[in-house]
Image 1: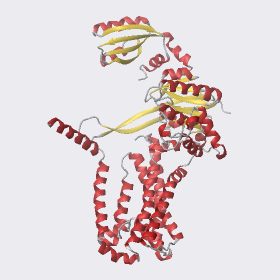
Image 2: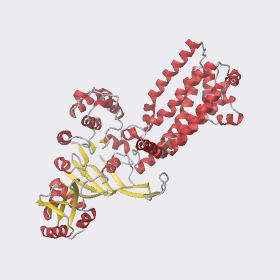
Image 3: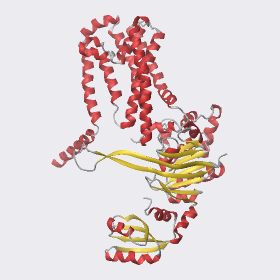
Image 4: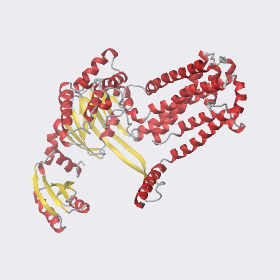
Length: 341
Length: 263
């Protein structure tokens, strides 16, 4: 058996499109200009068999594009990708037989006027589950995701969490050795997310020994359940290690959490470019008060007085500031220079 | 009062601006109205139609019944394939170990089964309530049906391909629908139209389909209408593979550009 379940070599995907010019002309007829986006940029990745691998990155980092290449939906422009040892271009059927895929938009392709059982019955046929095993397999996966009691309820009456579970059940139906789970907890409440994460880690990864590629833009999700994490930013893999090792990237620096009021976008950008500031994430904490939370990543604590001096000179009102223990999100900010938002 | 009127004005303005962004759709709607009026005007010109129907050797009731009944097949061929191979359900199927051909056949099958039930209802009502006598050439009917459906599925696949690429209106399906209503020999024989318009009918597959299917339902043999059958075979032989090629190309292009699920 192959040691590696998923591997990519210099994998690249470029999207070319035409976008409407922002230049105001007529409201109906607007000029279109060519735009090129490198969604996946010479990506080299190796995911071991049985590993729960988290792919972390902000929206637009290239996570979904990578999932779509791996499940043969998108052809790459350069490089190669192998799933279960099969080439995603030349051996598509073998790749499809090796995979269960859960897309970030999970409700597509599901039949709203069928119940959960009938939906899975249809998918079990198109995923080549042997006829004599179908009923048993459907009940097994429904039970494993906690939907056995709702099997014969109409899909349209399912809650958001139940719909997501059914999408996962569909991915599990053919009992594939490899699972691609693209933002599986998106749209779920906190409790449902936690239960789903525990199920993926305990049942799919630990008990069943499946290889899981788990994409998310929630740092805590990735750090809680994944064996290893890859950080993807603008299509490039900028770090790949265990959650603890990635947090270790922060050991040399300092993290300071600052609350300020009356700060402008230009001033935020100016702070980012200051000497000694490695990266900074910013978010509006209270729009009524105009209060911002800045998470500063400094080379050392010696850089802090310079930042505070800038606040004073620019008449930015400082509410409070404190040193913090670095988290995985801080590692992300340090690596990318920006936050996940 | 003025303030309320202004609100209504802005509702209208919002809708006009929004509507104007669907330019193809706008043109298609206007043309649909024109063609619809044209087809019903010819249907109403009963006097000239009766004489033409004598050529087909059937009553207006039988003519219309067969036209309406088998038009459901044409409608299914056009819309069902286009509807089922849409980007909403495509991704889920494309990641499964199921071929595109099986998906198209499987997705369309129920529509055609249901159409058969609808045809049976039409014909039963015609026979029982209006005393229309059918003398069906079953083999010929099945052959014509297969050729007609095959040809129109070809057009439908081109339309679906365009829809996948443009994400907007599909002019092919619309055009075929319009051509069916006016030039397709569904509600009135094209011979009641001026000669210049009749010529268009001879380039429309539905004209041959409805001509052949009516005669098959009245017991004619395939040999008696061989030229029309041969034209249908030719159209099917061109359109079905062409439709599949165009659809596959559009699908490949959308996959390459990553726009398959953009809607």
